[in-house]
Image (tube, rainbow, N blue to C red):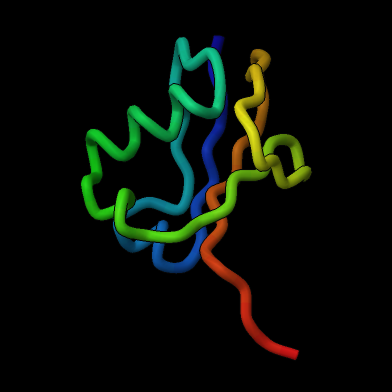
Length: 77
């Protein structure tokens, strides 16, 4: 199973990529833990997780070809 990860703003700066693929990641909690272990600054950064264009606030099971976006806080009016 492969998922695509898109990053934006500060998150993209931390991981030094705007997109990448990950294999064998079952759910969003596992994905976040994997990335926060690899990029410790993410632990201190607020960001939202979206799966297939829907923001999720709880652990979500990922499917093959899911697209996960890591979004920094939004501001503006």
